[in-house]
Image (cartoon, rainbow, N blue to C red; front, side):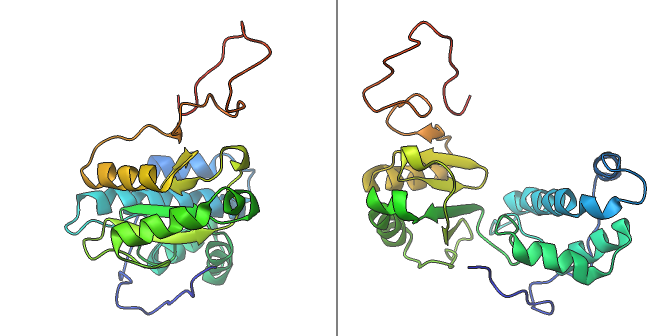
Length: 217
């Protein structure tokens, strides 16, 4: 599933620096002296989010990803050879190592979602956006990616878009979500049918007087 890391692609910037030295310092402070290597993962996440912030203001827009220059900078900060950072970035699917769209639509097609119709969700996305898996729309707004289980099986089928989960989907609702995001409008996260967290579809049968928090709040 992981794309090949092209260290010399044309889209790779020549340099990278973190805007917030304070954020880097805070991450490093979480680990004992001599254990800065443990900060590689949160620093990769920080870099990806910084790129996403820049991409949201660009024309065309783009989403968060981690350039080689950012990996090299992280290696310098933690005192490790760059290959140690490359190894982490290329192993974990949560890190994007090449440009993606402003909205990265990660579609789960593992067994529970597949049994609940994830193939129809994938087709709805492809038909609406006119792209295939692993591709990005020409306007830079959307990328489609097939992923393994995202851990929301009880509310299948579901997708993750950037940091948010959208659950209990139908093909029609998936298209509506894309339309709303394209227009810059907010979309309620979590169950799209009003299901409370992971309750049964018919509603709760016990602890009815307990105070609960709705999904996405």
